[in-house]
Image 1 (cartoon, rainbow, N blue to C red):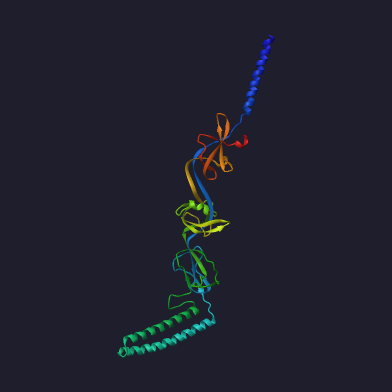
Image 2 (cartoon, rainbow, N blue to C red):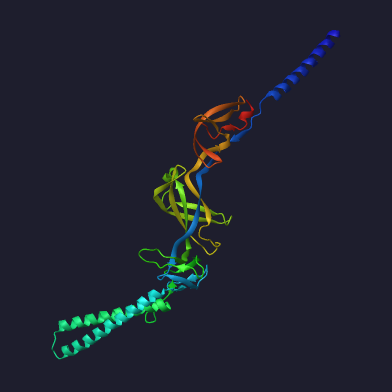
Length: 360
């Protein structure tokens, strides 16, 4: 009886020991957190800041120098070709007027003399005393003197009155294009310099066609192989958080500029303005999203799970039968900043160990 008791006690202790041993093994078993490999579309993009401007901006300038007397337009007004924009008040010096009056008197004297000669030659020609060739020469000299007199009087009118009554010449600055006035840089009373061969002249107003805008930025040379004329870029505007626009690349400069040691090239992309869009002002900041590469339905993993060591890349995959992690070298492709393409090294059926750094 005593032997049976001892046997039962030993059996009980053995069962308890086995249970404790199994529990200890369970607690020591490593629990791996895993993630699936998936197939998805991946776009490699860059974001480049720039500015937007009307595709066509014309600076309206004066043909006369003087003082800005009046402005007939305001920012936001639409003007047609030939519409009056401003008037210029001429401020001639006393010596200029005196000199021009002298020129008029001299031209008048010359014209009177040539008129007498012309009338005399006309009578001689009618009586067949002089040939037609000689009469033509008198006519030419008379017409030239008449034109010189008219020109001298016009110049005097411009100096005194700011306009010429006999012709469509005035001190009114007109628009050379149709569009919206986007800037009037001068105030009334400001000095204005005329546009001529030697001087670009003072800008009185800027008129733009606001139905078409362009985005302009500098793009680094390393991205140029991925961008071509006709490509689409997507714009977001700092002034309007919800506004986006699709623009087409129309120009890539062939001459670059160095910026912090990196060669960059001017890029222009054009986009149309729709009636639903808010007002865009010249110079607004925008950011362009440019797709450099894209892959369709490729094997991928979250970039944060990839291990980088020197020049190699790895993934830890799970050996489910042994409950072990395996360090597997992989070849990666493009990345969108969140997911990275896996070209070689793993299959879609394998599990990626996420907590590999906590199970060593």
